[in-house]
Image 1 (spheres, rainbow, N blue to C red):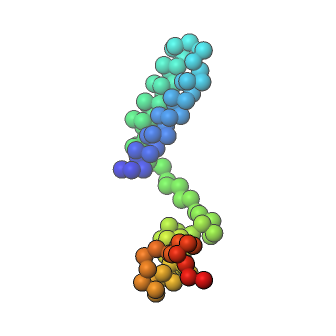
Image 2 (image 1 turned 120 degrees about the horizontal axis):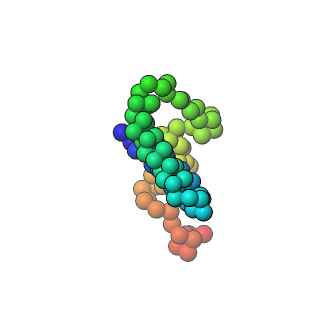
Image 3 (image 1 turned 90 degrees about the vertical axis):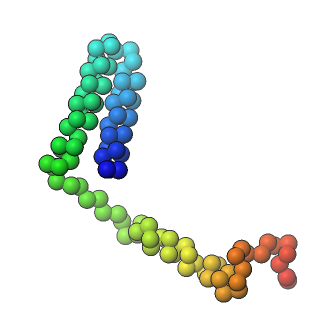
Length: 97
């Protein structure tokens, strides 16, 4: 459902942008653009079910969101704070030298 909403949003934004760029054209040309966008919205669910899905592979350095989050949580500063029982690092003013 979210994918359909995002695809619809992209289609409508593209049509609105094209109509805004073509503001000096005739009104019938702009209406044709917006009508084509509405026809695309009607055809979108049918096309999503009939056409094969596109899979986009992320590069290896991007990792998964869970892996990036675990890398942040397992950072040395975070683990040191957990061991000491502090919830936040000490400020530089209060730090013992």
